[in-house]
Image (cartoon, rainbow, N blue to C red; front, side):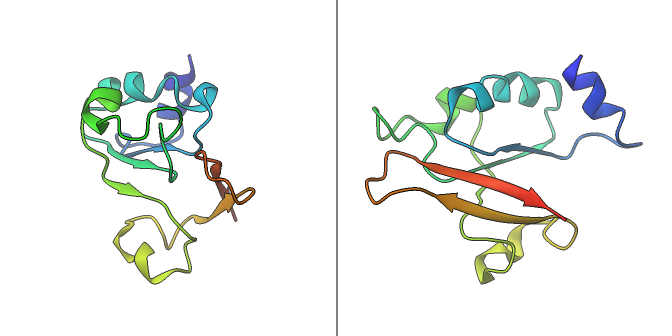
Length: 109
């Protein structure tokens, strides 16, 4: 049902899948989305699966490599590689000084 709702928002195919946080409930369907939309590029928040296992390969988790990690914000120089950066603004939020993957992405207009 969720995938059909996403597909109804556009006339074309889904081009990008964003995993916006390290929290399991926000990424549990990521691999299913990538299976449904095999040509979509994968973008993630920093620190995916960084705790308790620091180096799980992307191919094991997602079934493919990550197209890019969304660090900083849409205003950062590093964001120029992101195709939709002129259409959707984003900010990477972090919490605390002990990094266990506590990063989330927020999209806004």
